[in-house]
Image (cartoon, rainbow over all chains, first blue to last red; front, top):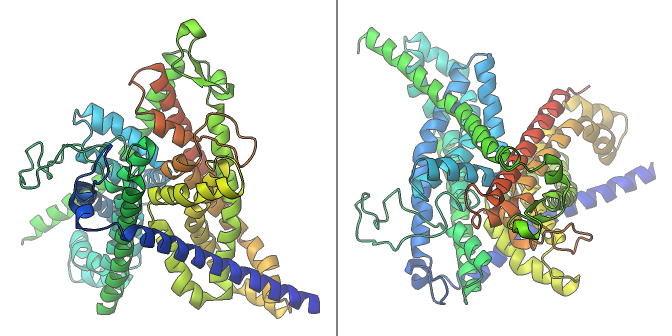
Length: 292
Length: 298
């Protein structure tokens, strides 16, 4: 009996230590990344274009590319993903087609991102003739993020109480009117959380982008906002190196004399953006949940 | 709006949503088709024997025919992936299952508030940031304190073990939470301590779920490319110790795809490696589905 109690105490200590060790690891990791990186972040770093072999470059266009790619990919991912999620939760019957969709979602979510990137190289870069381009990168990111958005949408729509739907249908609304006016608004906090998770993944992804949006950008003219011009930042068919890809690229080339500065600063920016996304999703969820 | 128009819109919406869902099927079929057609070219067009492909330990895809011809063997990549990922899963499982038990049984409040948030942040940190941290702290640390070059199997496994921590933890936690409370109450009523209840009642009952969690972690580790590539050293030999350099399937593909010309044997062989990687990830899905079918708590 006493042995059992002693064992209980020891196990308790071990499990508490594991939990504390994990928190400590995260704190040290974030503190290290931020303390080392933030000191390099100044206006020059944030606006100057990157250098290839000389010191003193910045990451300005790369930050723009990361955000622009994020927006492009979300414009494609969200309608498709939310649509598929609505279909699965509201319309799908128990049949082979539904089973095929579920299996595909699962398979897609477990594919290595480098494989998705290579598929993008074959289809979105070569077969379409676009070459390395933001659009190819956005489509590759869509393939990575669709399963996330689909399953989170489905979950949050299933959590909407049945009474809501029945009340709407009883008033004579069609299925679609019920979905659009009643179900989707109630499921919005969940769907938004899914969208922010997908956005965070898109911002930090690099493996799927190396061979789709490419590892270099043309010199950009930030006064030209016509998306049809080749050096306009908005042109979706130009190559674009993102911040995450840049960290990988400068390390694999090893040519930059101030590699440490650029990599530490870029990593800190990535971490800050991830933290901001995380806070935003928490804020939105508590706000929207309290409102309804 | 009249009724006919409303019903028409209803049907239209239904069709559009069905199209959205069908795109998922289309995507996976297209990936499967294109990667297979490129990946099989090594064997069909270039005539490399599949047995040699998997068992040969030399990778010399650009050696001219005069010097013995190209030699294509992916054994070092496969062994490297298996070594790096299994050690990562071994390390991560202990911490993840511990964390899941902590959140489910020991301190749900502290666990919910802090540990869950920590896991979300671990998921959010981009893989290149993990790679860069590994490269700038872990590699020099291993070089100075344990020996070798620092770029090593161990460095790869440690970086991966942190990256798969949230996956294994959250799936194990779901498994523990879905257990009926009767189980715990019965065990405690028999006079078992909390630890005895966890050890002899809860963990065994949650075993299929925890196994699923570990397989998911393994799948994620196998597919991770850049973080691993940055710290394992990428030497195409089979490692003999955890301090040796090694290479994985993903890091090999990442590094060499840009240097080889589309359609060449070298390039085709890289696509075959991608095909192997894809088949491994599908195999993991089959295992996971088998596990969850047999998960009926008895």
